Image (cartoon, rainbow, N blue to C red):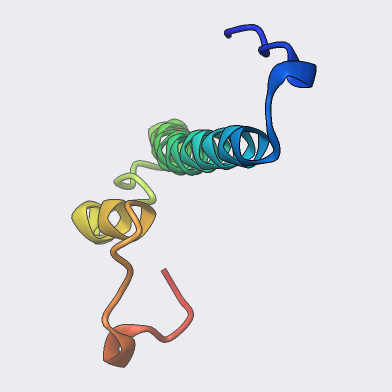
Length: 88
């Protein structure tokens, strides 16, 4: 993390540019964080399903769920409107 410049030496335009830069950077970090949380949720779900299956003899909870589709949704591509029924 870099130190902020001497704010008193910056003009209004430079301050606005600096704000825009940090807002853009924060948005990118937030997006990446949401994607990572989605991946973590999918992986934890599968691990839990496997643990449960070990006791019941079934396949994992994600059996039959399209992992590629879930990954696409998490990547921001989403479902086509005609397919979206609120369930994933």
